[in-house]
Image (tube, rainbow, N blue to C red; front, side, top):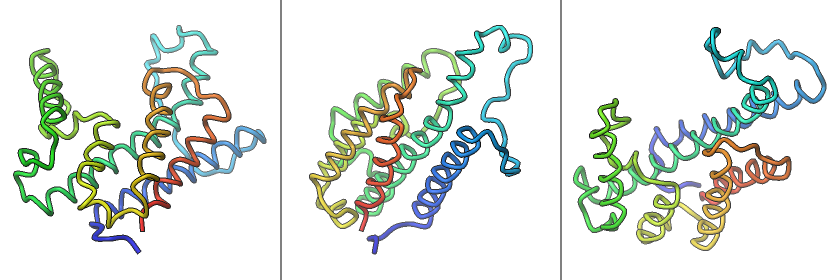
Length: 198
């Protein structure tokens, strides 16, 4: 049984489980050349003037990588939500300014946020935690194990799974294809993450 999981966290877990199921069904359709009549939408609504000018092999590769990005995006947002929920429950609304957040992580997140503000583009969020990296989220969990330990079965296992996920994040975030073994590793690592939770 999980610790004090909020309804929002439970919903995030449900969404990720559904994304993994959708991915598995996509693979069945692709591998066997069949349509399951799921009414599944395409991930990309392409710019009809310019997108077709991109080499077809690249467009096919992008479509194959889209589900992996979707799963990782959802997982990272879920982990951010967990960090926020646990620290806010312990420290209240000012949790971000508490000693629970390492100074270096707070400083780096706030610098990234300021760089976006200074660029004149729309800032992605007013929440500094949204500017944290996957590795920084792992560090925050480890630093606050007294709070997170009740959420997981093993600190070492959390470090191991977070390390694997962080390594898999690189190709996904930097537009490189995942080898078939790495696709399987991503699926297993996401499942491992949820199995870690009591």
